[in-house]
Length: 347
Ligand code: PEP
Ligand code: MN
Image 1 (tube, rainbow, N blue to C red):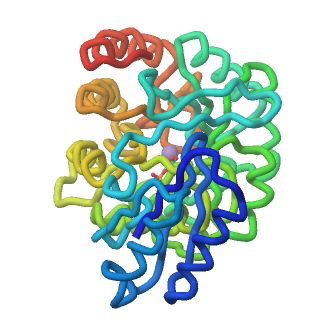
Image 2: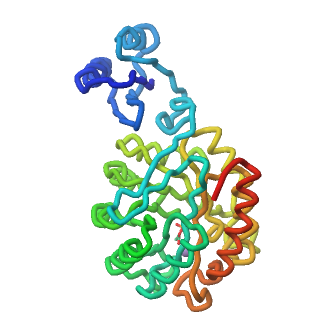
Image 3: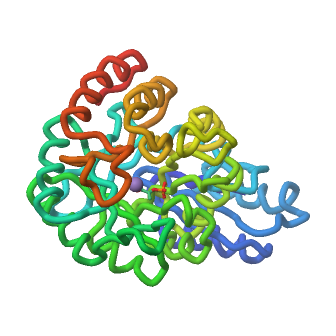
């Protein structure tokens, strides 16, 4: 059950609903949105849910409505929140605040890995000139081989913060372990949960406790339903600002590194109210496909893109083969204006 409260509800009124739910064996999770306050009744439904609990709740003056959600991903599902979720991010004092899920697309661009201050600030300035609204860059890198570059760690976070100070671009970076969530939150405007960690439930619970927005990448071999349930862990923890990110899945096709599943866009839009971002860089593993897949993603209704850009992709310490240079990124942004306009969005 989802209980939507009337605007301007008081804390004691919220507590009264939570107490009633607890009496009937539910756990309650309160989400205080910009306008609405929503309480999710979690746990196995009481046998008296429809006949007793819901009518009693509905009888409270401050309850707007009670919804029955059949899906296991209750707070994530569109049943619980029929309108698209639109939220702001960029609370760091140096960040320019941006909106996600609204008319203007979010474009996150930057190197796969943060390598040094000079390349990172140069890339941030260039992608900003071309219209990017966020800076991406990995400081803690989940590399397939233990002998590959593993990222600069804390130094990488500090470099991202310096690039943000110079440009105002909010920063997204990956956090790989629960123990590092607090530290990464000090620097990041958005926490990236990598594909390899989509089902790391301890990590999902930890980022659920934080109030930093999250980009949840789809696991390499995860179904849409598993992905929705992974997002539910974060929302159930009280962190409602979650974006999905499709980044390609494993199929039998070897000509691309992964198969970018663009049908995830309408699938997620149907199942959930949360925004979806496409990563055509990891999704194809091929620079020559990044521009066309970006355009297709926006045409299909994605809320934004996350794209790898480096001043000299051939020298990048990771994922150079799928990375655009700054001129290619500028050209992509030009193309995106046309596509975005055709589907009622802007860049
Ligand atoms: C990345 O964004 O560089 C990355 C490692 O992503 P993924 O988790 O999707 O592989
Ligand atoms: Mn990468």
